[in-house]
Amino acid sequence: MATAKQYDADSIKILEGLEAVRKRPGMYIGSTDKRGLHHLAWEIIDNCIDEIINGYGDTIKIRLNEDGSLMVADNGRGVPIGKHASGKSAPEVIYTVLHAGGKFEEGNYKVSGGLHGVGASVVNALSEWMDVTIYRDGKISNIRFKNGGEVASPLKQIGESKKTGTCVTFKPNYEIFKNCQFSFSTLCERMQESAFLINKLTVELEQASENKKNVYHYDNGIISFVEYINEEKKTLHEVVPIHGVKNGIEVDIALQYTDTYNESILSFVNNVKTTDGGSHEVGFKTGLTKVFNDYARNNGILKVKDTNFDGSDVREGLTAVINLKIPEKILQFEGQTKGKLGTPEARPVVEAVVYDTLKFYLEENREYALAIVEKMGKSKFAREAARKAREEARKGKSKKEARSLSDKLTPPQYRNPKINELFIVEGNSAGGTAKSSRDRKFQGVLPLRGKILNTEKATLQDAFKNEEINTMIHCIGAGVGAEFDVKDINYDKVIIMTDADVDGAHIQCLLLTFFYRFMRPLIEEGHLYIAMPPLFKVEEGKSINYFYTDEDYKEFMKTKDSSKCRVQRYKGLGEMNPEPLRVTTMAPETRNLIKVSITDAALAEKRVSILMGDSVEPRKEWINENVVFSLEDDFKI
Ligand code: 28F
Image 1 (cartoon, rainbow, N blue to C red):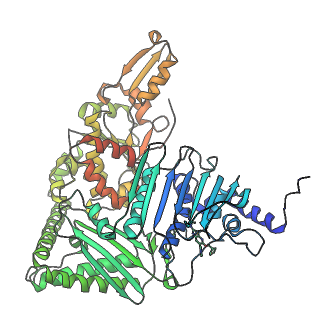
Image 2: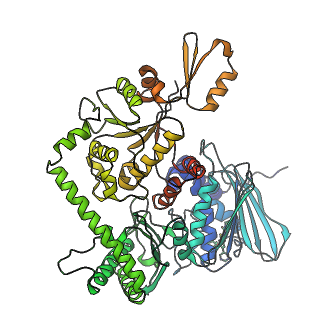
Image 3: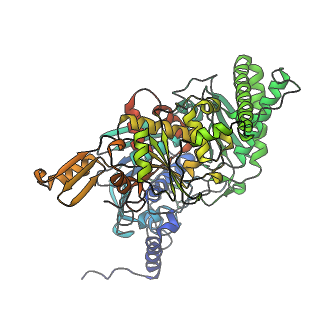
C-alpha cells in the first residue's frame, strides 16, 4: 500500500509559503508582466554570479528552450547535497523554503538583481516545473519539482562526474505570466553587461529555436564596455581607466569623450545597476567638473573674467561606466526600485578618486586634454548663445516669429494640458484631413512640411535654426534640452502621425531622435505616442472593416469571398476621408495608439545612432526590437 504522503507540519508550512508567492507574485518579483518574468531568470542567474564572485567557477551557460523553459548552469561548487536539519535534502530546502539559500557569507559583496536575493524558491513557486542537477563530490545528483514546488522526484544520484556546478532548468507558469515570453535580446543585454563588469566571467547564451548562440567575455571589463558603447562614434582619446580604494569603497571607472552631444553615464554598485544614479554619480560629476575647470584655468583656456564650465558642458559627449564595490554594512539603496545609491560616504570617495586620477591624466596627456577642453569651450559658447536666443525670444523680439510659429498650429479650443492632444502630422494634405477629423475641444494639429532636421549630430543651436523644430518646441511649450521642463507641456499626449511607408518611418525616426535628444522626459513620462492609421478598408455590403497590418488583412480575406468585398489600400493619410481617419486613428474610443518608451535610456543613445545611420535594415530591426509598442487602447474596429 503506498505510504500516505509525508505531510508533516513543516511540509505544510513550506507549501503554504510557496502558495503565498503564487497568490501575490507581485510582492516577490514586482509584477507578472515581461519584467516580472525576467526577474525569475535574474534570480537564478544571480545565484550563479554570486558563486562566481565568491571565487568558485567562471562560466554561466544559458539556454532558452523551445518549450519556453530556461536552462541556467554554472561551474561553481554545486549546491550542497547533504541532509538538512529537517531531514530533507539541502537542495529540497533551498528550492522550497522561502528565503533559504540566501548565501551571502559575511564580508562579501552582496550581489543580486535588484530584488536583493528573494531566493530560488520564489522561482520554483511560480514555475510549472523545475529540474535541478548538481555536480558535486564526484556525483551527479538530480531533484525535480512540479506545480510550483511540489517534489516530483526527490534528490537522487543519477551518475558520476568529476565536474562541479549547478544546473537549474525551469518552465515558468505561463498562466501567471500571461502573453509573456523570455526575450533572448533582453537576456543577452543583461549578461553582456555582467560580463563587462566581471572580467573573469564567460557567459554563453543559446536560443534553441533560432539556433543562435552568443558568448560574452571581456578581459578589459568596463574599458571594453565604454568601447562597445562608443563603437560607432568618433572618439577624442583612448578610454581613461580610473581606479582607487578609500574607506573600504573600491572605485572603478572608465570614461571616454566622443564628438557627439549626448552623455551616457552607466553606474553599478556591487554589479547591481543603479539606474537612478545616487551618491556615487554625484561624486563623479562633481570631481569631473572641478578637475576640468581647474585645468582650463591653470592653462589659460578659461580667463579670469570667464564663467566656469557647467556640468552639461563638462559631460557633453561623455561616455562613462562607474562600478563601485561597497561593503554590505554601509550599503544603502534608495527609491522604490532600489535603483539609487544612498551610502553618503561614496560621494567624497568617488569625487577624490576622479579628481586625483584625471588631474594626473590631463597633465600627462596634454594633446588629449586640450581637445577635450576645447570641446567644452564650444559647448559653453553654444549654451550661452542658445540662452541669449531664448531670452530674446521671450523678450518678444519675435512677437511676429511667435505668430508665424503658431499660425501653422491648429490649436484645441480649450487650454487643458491634462487632456489635450497634439497630432504632429506629416504633410499639409494629411494635416488638412486631420484638422477636419479632430475633436476640436481637446485635439490640436501641427502639420510638418517635409523632413525635419536630423538632430543626431545637431547642436541645440542648429535645432533652433530649423523652423519645423522651433515650431514644435514653441507649441509644446516646455522649453528644450537642459531647460526642458515636462511639467510645463501644453499637451498630455504628443502623437506622431505619419504615413505607413518608408518616408513616414524616416520622419518617425527623425522625430523620435529629436524628442530623445532634446525632450527626453517627454518620453520617460509617457507623453509621446505614435498613431496607427489603417492600411486597408474592406467594405462588404453595409459592414466596414479596417486593418492595421498586412497579416490581419490577409487573415480576414481568407474568410471572405473577395468578389463581394470593396477593398481600399491606403497609401497615405492624405488619401483618407475625414470620417475614417477620425474613427480609425484619432478618436480615443476607437483608435490604436502606440506609447513610445525607451527600455534602456543609457544604451538607447547608441541605438539611436544606428537609427540615423544610412542602412535602413538596422533601423527597422531597432524599431521592432526596442521601441516598446504597447497598444494603448486595443479596441479593434
Ligand atoms: C544555475 C543556478 O544556484 N549556483 C549555486 C551554490 C553553491 C553553494 C550554495 C549555491 C545554503 C545557504 C550555503 C556550495 N558549497 N546556479 C546556482 N551555487 N548555493 S547556488 O550554498 C547554499 C547553501 O548557504 C555552496 C559550499 N558553500 C556554498
